[in-house]
Amino acid sequence: MNYLPKLKQINDKYRMFHAMTPDTESDAKFLFSAKDNLTSIDMETCAGSRILGGYRPAFDATAIAKLRDAGGKLIGKTNMDEFGFGTFSTNSGWEIPRNPHDLERACGGSSGGSACAASALEGHVSLGVSTGGSICCPASFCGVYGIAPTYGRVSRYGLIDYGNSLDKIGVLSSDARDLRRYMDVIKGKDPKDPTSCVQPDGWGEASLKSVAVPKEGIEGLSKDVESAFRKFADEMVRMGVDVDYVDMPSLKYAMPAYYVLATSEASTNLARYVGMRYGQQEGDLSLKFDDYFSSFRSKYFGDEAKRRILLGTFTRMAGYSDRYYAKARQVRNVVINDYKRVLADHDAVLAPTMPFTAPRFDEISKMSALDSYKADYLTVPANLAGTPHMSLPCGYDPNGMPVGMQFVADHWNEGVLFDIAERWQSEFELKRPEVSV
Ligand code: GLN
Image (cartoon, rainbow, N blue to C red; front, side):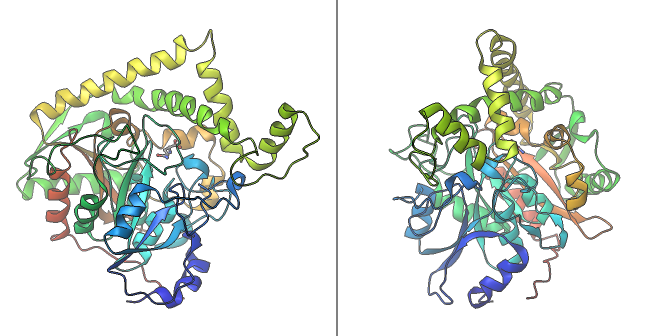
């Protein structure tokens, strides 16, 4: 289907794009979109924030440049939670993407627009970014495949940072084979990003034979997700995968540790937005600098960004940093060791991606910030560990909303994730949402 002629109407309905191409035809090899925290020469880049309104970067992010070099056309920049701060894309300073399976429900976050595009547009691939689960969560809510690779696998050059020690660029698509296909294009060491790694050839082991299910990963699930998980575990056994139940006690502490580390890093990253360099710059220049940037930041940052600046500044403060920041780093090591221990005898760790299916917007508006943070307890551990992880669509709840399962593999071992996703795709009937405009 050539959806370009109708892109504007599609976007009016689903609101996946913050900026998009005006072109109605293209002879490109493939069409792709990218989360709006990846810089692009030809389109405004705002990372979901009003503070970056009008920002036109002078360069492409490496991941975008590589996809263009491979013959792809960038058709849009996808709506997201401001700077990646959120789980439902409702913390966007711009538009909030709608779930293609039910417009009254969220797409997940923070790469919600990317999952929305991957779900609604046929043959489309989208770049997402995960700091604490922002690829797998929306992939699961929108019923598509999504991979966050090993930390350092893909260059972060051109990425507007949230938490530098956590951010990873990955791929979302309705076709499992696209994940390997496009990760092959965007991976690799980049001299422009010193944290991108020289990496082993290929994707590690080829086939997935065994998984470990942490008991901590199947607690606190909604009834629908729990029953979908039981069914999926049986399917795995039928497909010849050994399923073991194990203890991973550190998983319980990952969520609080993540929010300490992520907000600490975020609060320093946001310090550069003072109304002098990027995006919005109007302000009262007769004010003293402190007053100028305080009034500017008060006006253009959303509530969640402000909350994270306060939290992250507090956890790094002299007198408190040992108790919070340093402690959280210790917890991070314990989580890494727990994965290493379990992955020494298993090819992957398996649990549902999210504890519930896509909530309605009215339900989200009743959630506190803490309720929303808690929803991430299944996705943050792998992000803290820097291990690659993938969400696979595995079924639908009684409302027809997709359920996702998450596999976590060892560092540099994405191969087992591609293998299980491709095998699963040949068995599973993906229900594409009906897109009418
Ligand atoms: N929901 C998590 C957060 O708000 C993860 C977001 C992300 O990965 N960008 O921090």
